[in-house]
Length: 271
Image 1 (cartoon, rainbow, N blue to C red):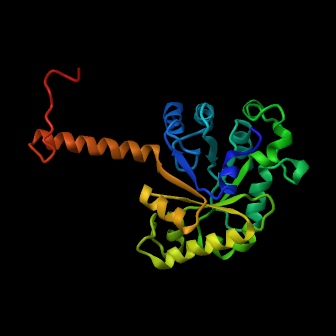
Image 2 (image 1 turned 90 degrees about the vertical axis):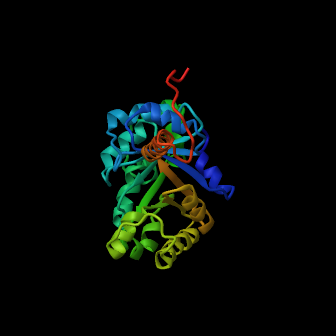
Image 3 (image 1 turned 180 degrees about the vertical axis):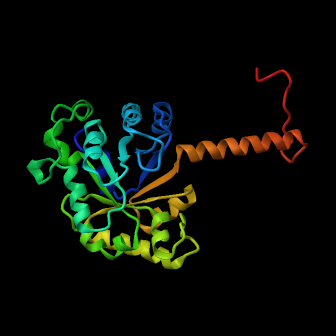
């Protein structure tokens, strides 16, 4: 891999479509990766995933063209370095509220030759990233600082001026919780919060930093892309599973009761 493909997408002015894994399963990760996402993120913060489950998930994602990313539990260098060594090509770090916190995050993802403090030992990354991984690591690895508090918004200009920061990633639920005490994923009925998002996009555009956001539906993601976000996450694997199962069970129940679908269950089984 000569460069991180997400950079090429951004350079072409397109929006990255990102998948999200919260289920600790390499099989579900592989299914998502084969769906055609540009990248797939292993969520180690609010997902049910620990390191031992995350590594085979990264391996499964790597069987496709999707770029493997990880959201780490916190701004803690050890897990960032382990996930990079395991072959992730980008780290999403939660709750980055100040320039100092951002510098600490970015430094954990960069080697000393470019001013970071990442320890050398790219066990799997040297395989998935190629034998010259070290020489290209600074270009391959993307850093996403999560902007999800009122404090981060106040400090946004300082945060996005951090050398080595590639992107910010808005957590809308935590951001609205911090601003007005209520978690809200989609701001379509909140023009004041939409103005906050526009401010994030404008500030980042001026600094050459990409913008990402977590979305709650395809419609939401399309609106955020139209607003100027460069990276949008669709529903997680768990959310898709729950929605599909709930819908199908409701259809079947409705059919059994003579509902509007008219579906009938055969006593002969599925074959």
